[in-house]
Structures are given as structure tokens and as C-alpha cells.
Image (cartoon, rainbow, N blue to C red):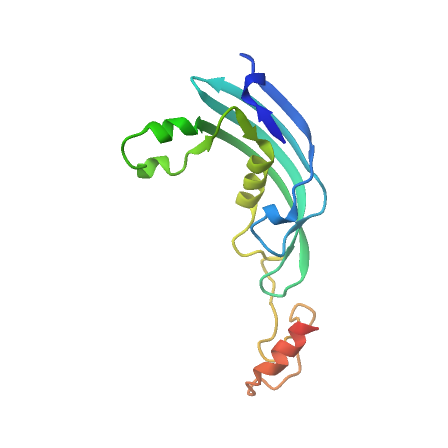
Length: 169
């Protein structure tokens, strides 16, 4: 959803709704949305900058990095962003300073809210998704899910093909 910044009045522009974010927008390959993203955003203008204050809610399905089981992860994210016109960067005669790397820019008179919401979802993703903190993972020999019980394989054996056969199933 693209917003024309000319629509942002002196009191701001409130945007509330539901958005389907495509799976390709998520940086975690195994992740997908179980429900559309509900959002409530206020856009305000201040000296050429656009302030975006908002919240979003959704539920993701992720795969645990230890046991490979899928699990649900609710997201309730609140954010405050300041967007700068890209022209300011183009007019600068010097290289980008390190403190400017975290700036977010918009081009022309349009702001893509879907992109902003997708970024906020991606920032909410865990680095190592775990179904639970106590997840025991998979047996390194046979690939059995150790959360469901002990495996009965020979731990002295190092036949890695057993493990990969189990994962393929």
C-alpha cells in the first residue's frame, strides 16, 4: 500500500487496516503468516521528514532450528520511524557517514507502507527460532525428535546417513 505524502495534513494521517504481506517479503525462508497483518499507523510531517508511529499484530509460523517442528509466534510490534527524503542524500557532497546508515529514506512523494510493515515483521523475527527454550532438538545419529523421548540408536556409531534419512521423511 503506497501513501502519497501530500495526503499528510498538519494533524497527520491515520492509517488503520489489514494487509496480506507476501511470504517472499519475510527474510526467514521457513516463516509464513497465519493471518493478515493488522496495523495502526500515524504519519506526520516535520520539516521535510516523515515520522511514522505505529503498531502491528500478526501471527507467524516458524520452524524450530533444533527440532524442525513448526510453531506459532505472535507478533505485537510498536515502532517509531523517521523517514528522510532521498534527495538530501543525493545532494550531499560527502560520503554517507556511519551514523546515517540507520536512516530510512523515501523517494518522490510516495511511501510504501507494505515495505515498512514487512521490515518491522522481519525485525521481530528471532535469530534462532526455538519452539521452546527447553527444546532438545534431534538426535545427531538417527534424527529422532528428542522432545518426544529418548532414541534407541547406537551413539557410538557415526553413520550420518541415518540422520539425513530421518530428516528427508
